[in-house]
Image (cartoon, rainbow, N blue to C red; front, top):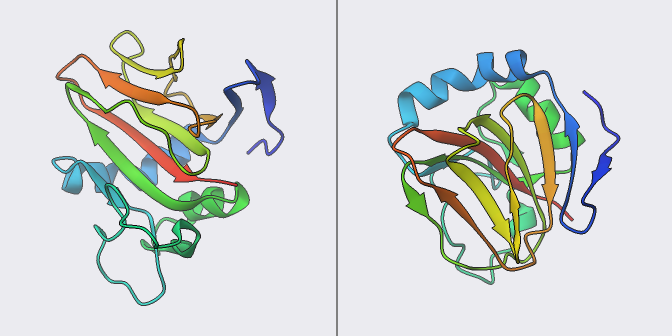
Length: 165
């Protein structure tokens, strides 16, 4: 895995790479068993045994940084990636034919696209469209800026999304 980010449109996002095949080998069983949901947690808080705790909108004043405990111990490579990139409150996000609200997050996010049709799936940050390729790319995105995500297709879109400082 390349830990150094390559600068691209630095104002909004930067990107690097992970071993896509190794990541997918671990994640596909979760997609097969939970792909009907909107999201599941990859990291949780100490003592939590609920893979849905922390999904969706967080009811503050919960500190997102407390979601730093790997939930799925069998995901060795995935957990290594999350840790090495300093990610917390990481989730496996599933999306079909949906547009998220126009919003901003309290911290930037890292996106690792796993399944995505770049013709029908895209992120809009302020006035810029970003298409994220499912090829092992890791995207740091400044989601503290107003943004949304769009999937205009019935095809499943799957990303790992996690918070970063």
